[in-house]
Image 1: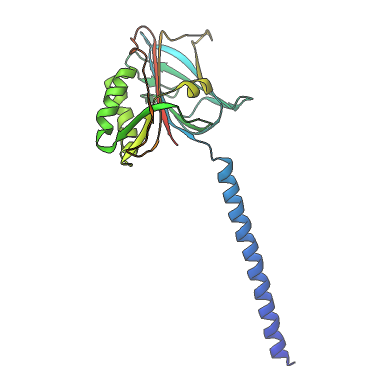
Image 2: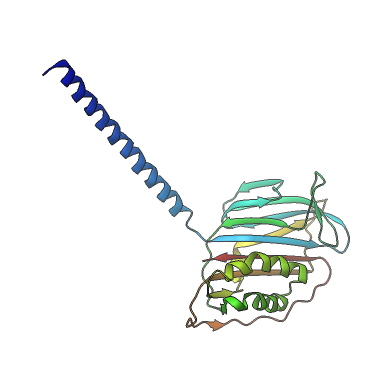
Amino acid sequence: MSSQRRASVERNGTMKKALIVIGVVVVAALACFVACNMVNNEPVAKKPVLYLYPQEERHLTVTLDLEGSLDTVYPAPDSQQATERGTQASWMVTAAPDGTLTDRAGRTYPSLFWDAYMPLPEPDSGFVVAREDAVSFLEGKLAQLGLNDREAADFITYWAPRIRAHEYTFVSFDASSYAQQVTYSFADEAGNQVVPDTFIRVFMTMHKAEASTVVTPQNFAPTPTRSGFTVVEWGGTEQ
């Protein structure tokens, strides 16, 4: 075999080996991508937001404890740590009666926001909502659940487009499982526990449905009356 032909064979062999190596790397990367997504294949608690309405301006530390892992948080918490239960995060804010929150750097916010990966089972009762009824449905139900006009507007502008993405959508406001996995505590400047006089929590579960989908209608408790130090939270998940 001539030296030229031998060099050509060697080059072809080297190229084949390189292609094999590249193929192995690509397959490994895809396997890693799939595995990582399977690990995080838990429902996402989307856009829980927390409003604080003290009767007079006061400095508060708000602590969130949840069974899950935080994803996006705003404003950034002053502290965050992993716990046996999941995750704990705390914010130090000055809360005004109108709901304005001011952090230690002097920036203001209307609420505290976070989302997280956490196990969330599907509720047993709810409603099937047609696309054209999404806004009026939410206006009525949120008023029953105790949200004021501002809070309901924040909720509707985020969630109505997601409901309207389907011709029919299953919607439930059963927050029982969520409330067991997500808890809050509040403390004053001296570290003394502060218990809200009124705590309203609204959590919605939704997923695509059909006109023929049969569900057990959900019943609501009487609309809560706001008094004293009031805390309001709303959020939801798409399943």
